[in-house]
Image (tube, rainbow, N blue to C red; front, side, top):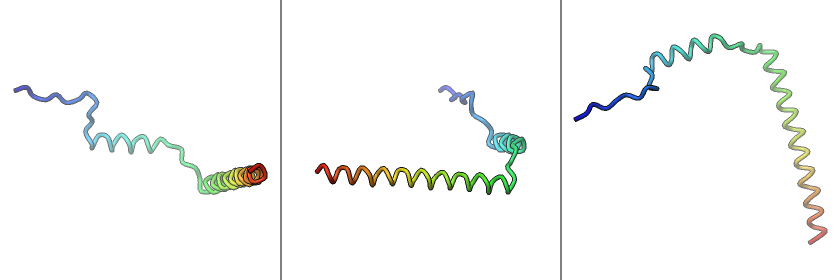
Length: 68
């Protein structure tokens, strides 16, 4: 009976966690102020996009109700 081979890409879980921690230490994390500012930008863009799509929906609804 042959012994099953271990795939070449298998990694020890302890080593994996150590490497993840090492990589996370290299990350440049944003400051609280940057995070708040960028969050506000994302919310503003989302609101504008939602309003635009809602306006188009209303316009197409009115056009389709006139045609049908």
